[in-house]
Image (cartoon, rainbow, N blue to C red; front, top):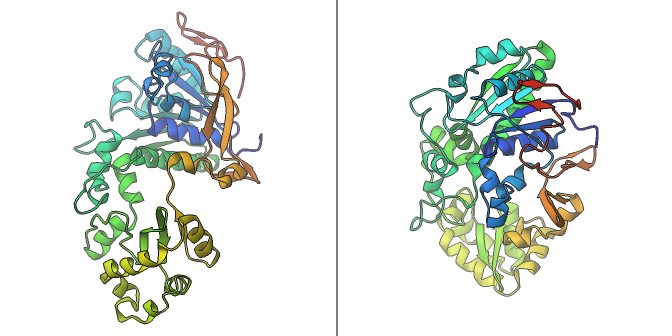
Length: 396
């Protein structure tokens, strides 16, 4: 696919583990050439993170494999004078420089924004950090779980009895990476009009609070703090997890019409005229009683049947799946969400990676090559660490 929007854009990627690599993975899927600059002999920490010890030992941990397909890898130590010369040569031809060090690390390495801008006035420099480049918390270490806790996410995850709970995947890392990718794309558009680069300072804490939607805005606008409600949706009822004959079922009858259709399909038309459930606010106030009535009716059929019946009638409803079940959904196969690649350094194994849910002109965005071995592309860029020379062999 050679018509991807970022074709011809080169990204120098200094990032590790997740937020940054997830950002550059999005840019790669959109067509950018992403060159990972990794510490010689060590590389991205994610190369050693995952459930298979053998892969971790080989520098191909699952966490790395999931976010780095389609990228290139070269080895440079930015504390070594010769390697710095090579890095600076690369900077001159780059469109984007991406890093997720703690605030101030690049400046201490001698690569503050003013220096980078002098080296390449068209450069877009994006720094992802836990708290942003300034402020009293800027120097604090921050992993995803730390951000989840500080953003208030954990305080509203779970039930009143179990909260605070960590969201079951690194949502703050992912949101931070997505916001950074969006900002980079916007900056590239701006540069096409002005010819000037930009410095993008992305805070995972701020991105997380922004992504929390009504949980944040209800307090900011109305002074109403959110509370942990488990599997129930605080904005409407009936909206949450319910009990079908064979397991849990999600239903989100958030509109009046959907509630009335739900009652009819359950054979419980009398609930519509029950004053306890007459409108949205009444249903929210009497949520427990309403859920009890609905669960009693739902237990007559398995979840998959209710999913089919309710969805066909315009009531949002679906089974609650495990991850192994979710990745088998026919919808994902039809949309081409997954890509099978050759496994790095192992011809007997296949690597399956995800896309990002975007189709361009009817075609899903896919990686074309597997995640790189550490330093796999040193020769392509003709790196000479002793002389500090980069003589590019293959243009993007």
